[in-house]
Image (cartoon, rainbow, N blue to C red; front, side, top):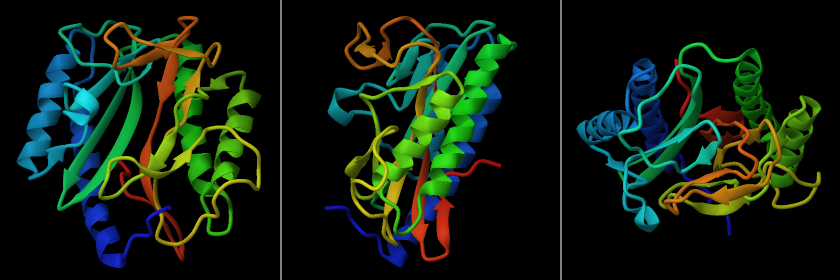
Length: 249
């Protein structure tokens, strides 16, 4: 069953989303060649704790860190390390926070210095298709209307959506119902209703959509080594339309 949030709960999540977006803004400023992903993780954890929140990911199913840092062919759940970013890399930052009893979650993909034009296009298309998916999240539409719209746009641009990972509901738990695929058949799945809060998160590859676990057992990467990008927002369905809770400036 998909939880419906009250006005009070939505207000809490709205405030949480503003805080998390400001933390992501700080992390974004620090992404440059030479910085390690572990250093970014330390900054993220400090900022969350200073805000009064707790990291959503650290300890979740054994995950060891606050931040997920996925580089190049890594799709999601990359574990920060002393690995330093290099010119031409792309980095996905995924972060979640729990404050006042509710989680919020977001992700962005950033170029590290100058990158190849086609890689820039991958990042741009993934960011754009998240916005397209958000616009499709309307009362009366279905969950799979969102995935179908995301899939068709991504494939029209010559890329692929990851099939084995998905978005999700969020609230008192980090992962709630429903699962939100980035592909699917229109007019199928749950009907979208007022008060539902989701994380939409298209994951897009330059090559094949098939994935495999990374060696550490936490992350996922493309099987063919192709680059991948990932964007995510926490959003709420209101009677006036959808509202993004983790919007950055």
